[in-house]
Image (cartoon, rainbow, N blue to C red; front, side):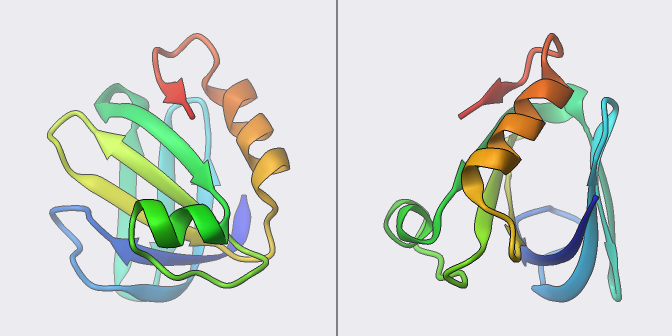
Amino acid sequence: MIENVTYLGGHPSNKRKRKKCVGTITRQSVEVVGRGVALTIPWSEVVSIEAQNPDEARFRISTRIQSESTALVIQQRDGSTVLLEAHSCPKIPLQGAISQIVGGLGVVVV
């Protein structure tokens, strides 16, 4: 569970940015819950998930995040891209944890 997440947008059902959310990554799905947003994205709908540091996020997806944060880029099978900002969460440990959780599920971890 990541306690301080900002939903940056991208999901068809929730277009607006939402701060102070809680993100949970399980063997079944990625969940984001907060004021005005309640998303559950099953891994069966995900093609890839990528963790990006602030510099990568700025240049690759044109998104500014805080210096101690990691951007999560979730590419869905329907073509949409969900963007999350995990505050105070370094890229390498987060990426490693995601790899362990989704191992064998057919999701590419970048």
